[in-house]
Figure 1 (cartoon, rainbow, N blue to C red):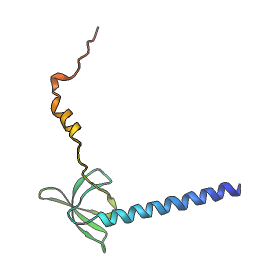
Figure 2: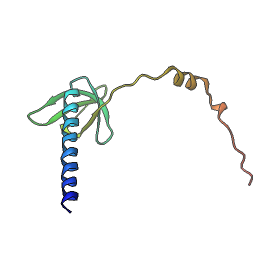
Figure 3: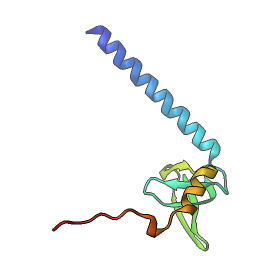
Figure 4: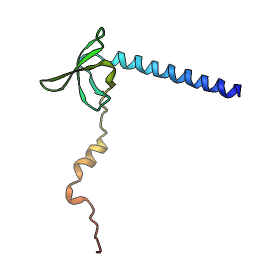
Length: 105
């Protein structure tokens, strides 16, 4: 019973340490100009962060700025490069290329 309790405490401590490291990494990436996503799925460009008030200004579309709690920013969006093969596949298909199925009703 004590071993199970010890394992439980160990995993709780480890998870807490991991969350803290992820939060620190996020805070270093959150700089004005970074593209971010909020917990409710809104994407935008970070304009400023007020550490004192725990607020952030986010531009969602040109001219539209929203003020939100800093902790609602879920992650910094990093654009990945698309491989040439994916681009070639996307350019080579048209709506007419899609297979059709017959419905025998």
